[in-house]
View 1: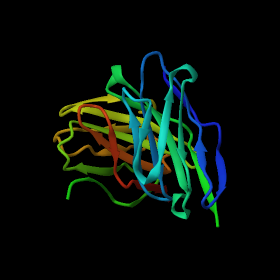
View 2 (view 1 turned 180 degrees about the horizontal axis):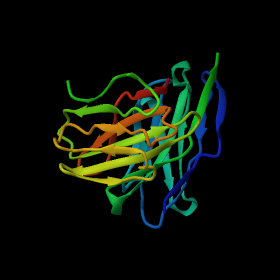
View 3 (view 1 turned 90 degrees about the vertical axis):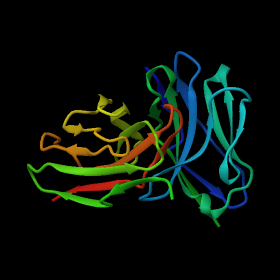
Length: 114
Length: 111
């Protein structure tokens, strides 16, 4: 069975500083990988996804993520955080062989200090 | 304007009552999904449907039921058998079972 771990429950970062959110997954084959962002009381918005090919993927809002097969990781990064990036971020892994059922990590809440 | 709509935004359930959450999409997506989100937790899959008139249980299907009579619609019923229904419910859809796109959610509260 697939699983996803986001080790950091909360991260506080100053506006303008860089941000990295960690994601580790467990899956027996090459997974689909996703990062979503959720503002309070809202649905999830897709930031970026990895299916195959280039292991560094670019997403919306200036985010990028790097797939590292050897480390089973898919960490999310942003060079310079804006106050509007304060939200909860979810990493998810999709099972190609089972209708792409998504398994989500527990989420990382990002707080941005002025 | 394409997208996924969920209604109502807030729903209140009385003891022993069944309630139905609506999910509609006009994206022409084949697959649809229901997730439950509890505070401070990730999403857990309740049910999913890959085609009309077919659906499968997810990880936490007990106390819930669904139907998929139309491609655009995938309503979720929270039955009285679900003893802890208070949560945020999210519907999603995808084309070719790849990227899932989410609706705005319904918050269910117990009176």
